[in-house]
Every structure is written in C-alpha cells, then in structure tokens.
Amino acid sequence: MTTISYGKQSFELGEGQSVLECLTKQGVPVPYSCRSGVCQTCMMQATAGIPPASSQIGLKESLRLRNYFLACLCHPTEDLEAAMPDDMHVSVRAIVHKLELLNDEIMLVELECLTPVDYRAGQFINLVHDSAHVRSYSIASVPNLDKHIQLHVRRLPQGRVSGWIHEDLALGHTVEIRGPTGDCFYIPGKPDQPMLLIGTGSGLAPLYGILRDALDQAHAGPIRLYHGSREQHGLYLIDELRELESRYPNFSYFPCLSDVHVPAGFIAGRVNEAALRDNPNLKGWQVFLCGHPEMVKATRKKTFLAGASMQDIHADAFNVSHL
Ligand SMILES: Cc1cc2nc3c(=O)[nH]c(=O)nc-3n(C[C@H](O)[C@H](O)[C@H](O)COP(=O)(O)OP(=O)(O)OC[C@H]3O[C@@H](n4cnc5c(N)ncnc54)[C@H](O)[C@@H]3O)c2cc1C
Image 1 (tube, helix red, strand yellow):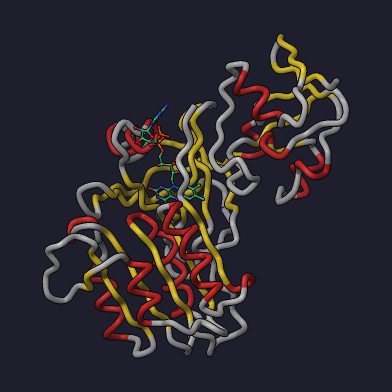
Image 2 (image 1 turned 90 degrees about the vertical axis):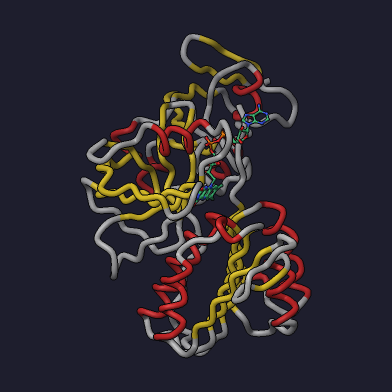
C-alpha cells in the first residue's frame, strides 16, 4: 500500500487511485481541470520520494528534475510527500495592461509579463487566482505581432475565476501565470495545406491567434474559420475578421448562429455542422477545434471520418472543473 503525505496528513492510496483522486477525496483543495495530463493545473512537487516518469509527461525538464509531477497522472509505486508548486519555479508575474469587453460576456485581458514568456499563438497559460483555483486560458496574441499576451475570458454564471477576472481585476494589478503549454498552434512548413478552424464562444481566442500567425507566416493555402454562437451578440471580433477576409484572399470567415432568427450575413445552424457541410472532404487538411467540450469531442470524430488524419486534428476542449 502506498501513502501520499500532504502537509501534516498522510493518506493511503486506494487501488488504481491517482494522487489527485486521493487528495481531492480527502478534501485537499488541489486545483484541476482536464484530469488527463493536458492542462497541467494539478501540478505538484514531490518533496520526498520520486514520482513515476509517467506522471511527468509534458513537463519541462527543469521541472521534472525538481520532482514536479501531474497529480492526475500520478500512480506512485513508493510513498510520496507532495506539496503545491513553488511559485518561484513555475510562475511568471504579469501586469494587467488592458481590460476590454469584446461582447457582453467576453473580456480581452492583456498581460505584460515581467519575465519573457516563450509561447506560440493558440497555446494556453494557467492563471492563478489562489492555490486552489488555477484556470487555463488560451492565447489569442501572436508573439511576432503583439507586445503583450492576450486572453479572451468568458464570464460563467457563478464562475469563481472568470467572475474574479471580470469583477475584480483592474489595470496595474499583478497576476501569476504558469506555462504556456498545449499543442494547438500553427505549424509552419506546409504553406499550401488547407486549414479548417472551428470554434464556439471564447474558443475563438486560440483560433484568432493561429489564424493571424498563419497569415503572418505567409500561409498560402485556404484558411476557413467557422465561429459559432447561439445569437449574434455571442460572436465578437466580427469587423476585425471581415477586415482580414478582405485583405487576404485565401482567408474566409463564416459566422454561424444556431438561433431561429438569423440576420443577413450570418450562417444558420450549428458551427460544426455548417463547417462539415461546406467541407465534406478533409483529406490533407489541418483542423483546429476549440471551445465547448461536446462540440470539440463530436467534431474531432467527424473531421477524422471526413478524411483528416489524427495528427492533423488539434483540439482544445474548454472543460470546466468543479471542486
Ligand atoms: C485548455 C483549456 C483552455 C481554455 N481556454 C479558455 C479561454 O480561452 N477562454 C475562456 O473563457 N475559458 C477557457 N477555458 C475554460 C477556463 O479554464 C475555466 O474553466 C472557465 O473560465 C471557468 O472557470 P471559473 O473558475 O470561472 O468557473 P468555475 O468556478 O470552475 O465554475 C464553472 C461553472 O460550473 C458551475 N459550477 C461550479 N461549481 C459547481 C458544482 N459544484 N456543481 C455544478 N456546477 C458548478 C459554475 O456556476 C460555473 O458556471 C479553457 C479551459 C481549458 C481546459
């Protein structure tokens, strides 16, 4: 039987139980989101004992060497003493440089990092509210084009971190971010490959970054962006996207509305259905899917069945976590 110690308490791990499952069941407030080793919000550090290599997948070498691990992937074979990450090693401080509503519920948050952060447009960072509440937000800015990191944060009803961002964050405040991480970004080297970008709500954030990055890198193949919401006020950056469409002949923008009343200039129906109806053969395409978890899951399968190869399908499901 292996034991996991946290603070002054020790717990026995149940059969097949991860460190995250064990600690949260015992009431230890470990932040988490995806529970599958992707978002890295449940990162911890072993202060005694060695975490298994399988719980360190995707972590930077400097963190692996300091025995950081992902609690959701950690099934230790020896006793471990675990602590929350030491901010000095994993976090970067950033100043809130701009806050601007993009629509009724989505806020543009611009962060000026006090230490340079090497990122790709479309990856995500983890924003620390407090030690128990760490949330992932995708990066809409492009390092080559934008001075600061830009996020699009949608306010959820009673959402703890998105509520704090919308209500309490102010210009000049200092926040802590971790990362970046994730593999949803433009990969140069195939400039003629067609690209299909599908997103709902604030799922536009990574897609906007990927799109502008691809255009900036002179991507020549067609790029089609489908952004969906129920009603028109759920969409945003419409003028900016139409302006890019008029400037780049290889880029097309399709704003989709699933409501019954659809004004002229918008496409009626669900965003993923419209995208697949217009583009039924995706053999050789690069596909990016971001936003609502159910949309992302269903569309990943459908784009694969339409011919896109698994390695060309990049997806970030905006899962929410509950403690
Ligand atoms: C890879 C990734 C990238 C992401 N990128 C973005 C992005 O670019 N933009 C963006 O806006 N979001 C993004 N998200 C989602 C984001 O990380 C947060 O999950 C989101 O902001 C909600 O956090 P919150 O603390 O505000 O809400 P939470 O407090 O976590 O609550 C979420 C919702 O659940 C409800 N809820 C809370 N507790 C319970 C409970 N016990 N039972 C039932 N319901 C409950 C709340 O009312 C709320 O509506 C991303 C997520 C992932 C995984």
